[in-house]
Image (tube, rainbow, N blue to C red; front, side):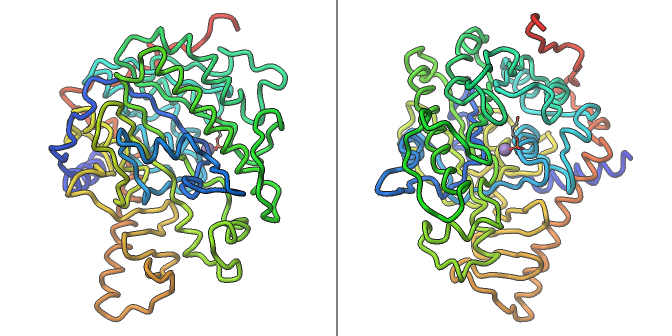
Length: 431
Ligand code: GP9
Ligand code: MN
């Protein structure tokens, strides 16, 4: 109902964090290229196996003077996995408590998503490049409702034989074979690359990566390092093209890991590699491993650095829009700008667990981040922690009411024209 919507609007308006004036518009007018690093966890950054960096190119990018990077950034996906990550990044609303918002509501819901907003506020052209079939996660319908103008799915590439693996075209080929489409896009563009090769069960032909894997006791965990190395090299090759074509210098490249690659039940296999005792592995360690990288690479800037701010995928859209110099005040967004001094650093996981800079809450148990040990709160702390838990529950349930009841249909903004999905046709004309 309209009154449910008013509750959501009040929450997001009260929760709004104003932009940091030093960062607002830093990337104004640039193309935006999003590189979705499939299943890529933060612990891979700077990790060496047998003395060799797993992801040397991404490590360089992460520490570059032209990149704003985050090392306390968490994925917040639920069962919708990739699609939940996409939803959070495009809309700054959470995925659903069960299932995938893309598949459950993506065909019919009203969206006020990044592609449409950037088109209307900054004249951006929008496109997605992905080597899987368009119907996976219902993307073909969702993207139209988000206002994506182009979707170059598997039908646009030669995906035959050993060019594909698991969920589609191998990443190096996705980057290489999509360039002919990317360079035709009217600028400025907002273009998203969804990689697939670094996906469970991490099987890759040996000619695709020679990386020497560790011996963790789990074959899929071992091979995760090999496919991550392949992804790193794929991004490196893509950068070489961006540089050669001249696109690099007038673009902002945002890279992020969508969710964990190693599941909690396998995490103890990582303990030795992470310098921990596998016998002491606990829920706290699992929660800390939900970190994924986030980087805004803006070639030409000189003050890039690694920020230790706590945040998650819900915070990306306001951060990105502010970097582009676009106001977010009027939109329904549950996240807050990571650069704002009003940023909210309580990170809500989809199952209502949470992390703050000092504490981690799991199933109602509180851990100290400093010691990694369970603490027994005193009365005063108890109040503090139940306040955090209430806040987390509240924001998740408001986001759920918004999405489950399609409340955005009630939101008429004077500078936002509703998306008409019938305007878009993603067919390549051949099939
Ligand atoms: C498939 C890919 C994988 O197209 O995005 O999705 P995931 O299994 O990670 O949710
Ligand atoms: Mn994924």
